[in-house]
Length: 219
Length: 407
Figure: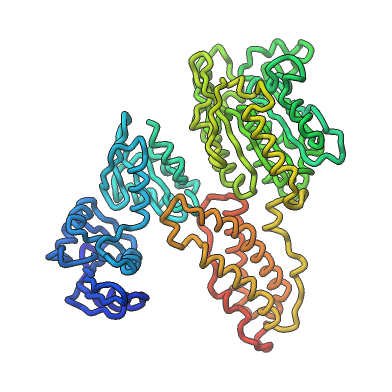
């Protein structure tokens, strides 16, 4: 597993980010830090890395002073993040995300207040659910949801167009056991083999959001 | 043995639509639907009076929960006593009965009680899968609406409970109703995926009153996965199919569906909805004199598909919103525009294959597989996964205007 990049990511991000319609300049502060000048909004400082597992140690390796950074981008496309790293970064109002997140965040006046649209949707729906009394983000895609007069449930949210057996197994490996897996992508569906693997692992797939909200009311 | 009983308007060759009532476990084609003894207490008869231009039918089939009553089969009118067939076998038999009675040639609606809903979902599946049997496929293609009354789409807890009482000798019909039966789950997914795409209006109701302390079909199981959320009724599992007034909610709902979706012509009644996407566009299979002429013919179709994909395709940011309505628009546009365009492009290129280079023929075959994968997902509801994406080379196929390249 890649634990840390060799410092190439700053240059790579600086080059890539020039394709963004709001960006007029990008200069390297050091191997992993990029200062970005935008057309309409203030300059921002981006910390960069390329790891599969992003944890607190990664965060400390990348940034010495989180308060001086507006965004931490992990350019490894299929990465996952521990809840502790997310919590630590949120204390300093510094979002962590992939290149897609960075591109969306750069369109906002205040980059440090950026929230991934899928996460924003999930957390809003959980806050509005009558049965849900609280929730904790254990990993980037795994939540523990506390419910009124019902046991808490561990839920993994996946956004794949086609939810396959491999996606289920990979999530199980990365995040540990969970009892529900919810497909948040409104297109596509879970494959038949994914359903079989979920049965085997003892979890249930919800590929319709409405079905998941209903399931939160039941044991 | 199943049989379709004629209630009203069935012999009228000019009738505009057909409605079929389908009873449930241990039900009866007449008694299931009436609260008293006379026709004036019978919902199917009320419907016949309300819509004289509609054929109203009631299906009868053997669906006994237990085998113990088999000794009654010697009594007059009790031939089905104690008997039942599995859901899949029953569906094949019912489908043949429907076709034999000319059902499927006009807009069609099913009103199903309990197990009857599962039978009809399986009938629709069998009709959909009836390749090259147009009369059977027409049953699926012309179904405009299905109403479920306390249908246990995911199995019923009472059926599971009864199976564990040895003296009741459960029949295969009761076993089919076990809660969380994997086959029911598969059928649930199939209907959910196909009903919406085929434009079948789905409505569902569930009971609020217990029978003997047991709620036979719970709200969760009564949800067919499509259509509005199931509506609770202050009835038990038996009385839910016997409305007492003509303006009861179930009656109003059914009347409204008939007016909106059966009596208003939408599209061809024989070829049906799925045919729009898969019509073999024989008119497009024209030979053109030059490569450029072929390209000019397919270019508008490719451009239209690209615009739809870029605007509504699943890669757009709405993918992060599981409640996005753009996903519904995308699926409709795939069915109504992208798939028919793909068929036209294939027909044009096949008719002009002699103008393609060897490399372009490979691109055409990639595109053909892409089209097949797309239809497998969107028309046939196959969720086995895989499939190839649109080959980008299609955008430049036949681009060079050079007759010497053909081969």
